[in-house]
Amino acid sequence: MTVTPFYRFSITWAAVLAVSSGLAWSQDAVSPDQPEVNPVDATHYQQVVSKAIKYLENNQAANGSFSEQLGPAVTAMCTTALLENGVPRTSPVVQKGLDYLQGFVHSDGGVYAPDSNLRNYETSVAVMCFAAANQDGRYDDIIRNAVNFQKNIQWDDAEGHDRSSTFYGGQGYGKHKRPDMSNTSFFLDALKAAGEDSSSEAVQKAVVFMSRAQNLPSEYNEQEFATHVAQDDRGGFIYTPVGEGETKVLENNGRTPDGGLRSYASMTYAGLKSFLHAGLSKDDIRVKAAKDWISRHYDLKSNPGMGQQGLYYYYHVFAKALDANGDRLILDPDGKAHNWRNDLLNAFQSRQQANGSWTNEADRWYEGDPNLVTSYCLLALQYCHPDKDR
Image (cartoon, rainbow, N blue to C red; front, side):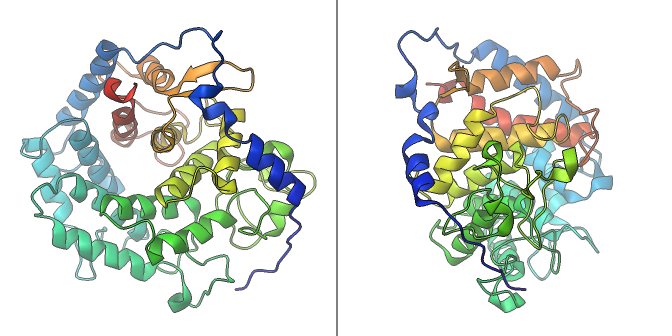
C-alpha cells in the first residue's frame, strides 16, 4: 500500500508556527503578575498514593495476577505501578506479579497470552515491568528477546511496507494487525525502558509513522486528511493514518465539514511524549505544533475530544508527556498559569474512591476495571511527586 502525495504545506504558516508555538509552555512566559501557582502538597500526594498502593496489594489474586480475565497486561501494569511508587521488588505482591508474568514468555521472545491478538501491547507493558524490576540484571534475557520480538513485528520493508506506505514504522496489536498510535506509543515506551538509543532504526521508523498521524501538513506528513485540517485541530493527533485515516472522536464521525479528521488529547499527548523520547528537538515543528494544540485544549475534567471515554489512559499519557517536556507551568488560552502536576493530583484526589481505587463509568477500553484504572493513576502519579515539582 503506497501513499498518494497531497503536499500543500504553506511555508508562511510554518514560519509563524515555529515562532509562536509552545511559548505558553515556558516558565519565562509566565508574567510576574500571575498569582502564585500552588506546588504539589506532599501530604496530599502521599495520602492518595498510599491508598492506591494498599488497594492493589489487597486485590491481587492468589496466583499473582490482577484482572486475569483481561490477560497479562493488567498484571504487568499493576506490578510496574507498585515498583515505580516505591514498593520493593522483594515484596510478596511484586514478586508474585513478576512470577505470574514470566509464565507468558514465549519461545519467540514475546510476552503474551496464548492465541492473543494483543501481542505488541502485552509485550510492551511486560518489558516495562521487567525493566522496572531489573536492578541486578536478572531479566536481561527476557527484555532483550522481547524487544527483538517487537522489532520483528514492526511494519517495515520486511513486512511488505516500505517508507512510502502509511503502515511503515508503526505497531498494531499483533502481527498483521494494522498499526495505530496507541500501540506504537507503547512500543516506544518499551524500547525506552529497555535502554534503546533514540537514534536506533526501530525508533526512527516509528517516528515516521507517528508524524503521519499528526494533523500537520509538512514534509513529514503529506496525507490528504492533514491538508484539510481545521485550525482547532492543527498539531493534534488522530488514531492512525492508514487508509483514509482514522480518529476515535465520535462527534460527526470524527470528521470536519471539509473532510479533515478531528484531533483528540490522549493520542496528542502520546505523540508528544513519543517525539521527545525519540530525540526530537523542542524546536522541531512537530513538537511545537503538538504543544500548541495541548496548550489550547488544557483540561483535566475530560479527555478533550472524547469526553469521559478513555479518561484515565489520558491522565497516564498526559503525565508522561508533560514530564518529558520538562516545564512546570502551562498557560491556558485565557492566560492562566497551571502547575499541571498539582492539577493532576487534585483530579486524582477528587475522583479516588474510599477503598483507594479509581474506575470510569464510561467503560470503554476496559476502564470499568478498577485494577487497570488504578494502575494508570499510580503510573501517572509518579510524575507528580513533590520532588519533581521544583
